[in-house]
Amino acid sequence: MITVALPKGRILEEVIAYLNHCGLERYAEKLDPKSRLLFTDIDGIRFIFAKGQDVPIYVESGIADLGFIGSDIITENKFDLLNVSQLPFGYCHFSLCALPGVEQFKTVATTFKNITFQHFKKKKQQVKLIHLHGSVELAPLLGLADGIIDIVETGSTLKANGLIEYEKILDVQACLIANRQTFYTKEDEVYPFLKEVGVF
Image (cartoon, rainbow, N blue to C red; front, side, top):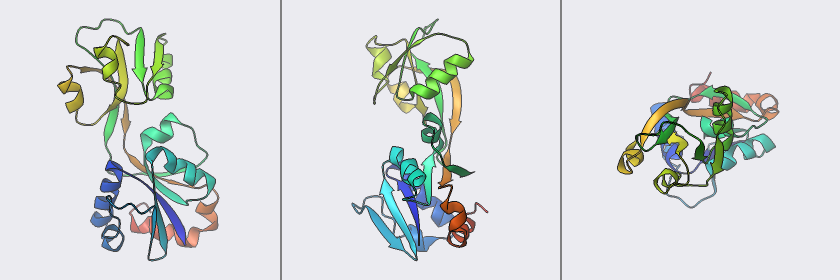
């Protein structure tokens, strides 16, 4: 048996839609995004449900052999695992955003401090970073920061709060990750699943 870690929330819904697209209804129909189950076994595969940030931890540790995750999480935090393939869903991007009329960014708020740090380092621009855990859009509205770096999907939250995108920084999409060791030691079980989901 192999174990596949799935992130709760929007990505899980897109994983289910993708499995249906691949003709894998036998998996998709039993993966209920509203279920309170923590794991379920389907045709010899154990699917576990975890917070997105925890999926690569389960994979890195070997608790899960494979995992579906947004590329933002494995870009922000470095993990010792294999990034097997990008997947055709979960598209969004990082942007530098602020109220209209900002001429210089001296203070930037973000949940993704490593991605933000690397962005300004490449630009050789010194800024003060403020690490927030959510609702970063509030920071420029209340004067805590000149701008934010955050994930933008539709832009509706920005628009609703009078913010605009100044600079697109990094594309994000779903990807399939694997534990380095079990990717090879369980290849007789891992590879058939990868073929089913269109990776190989």
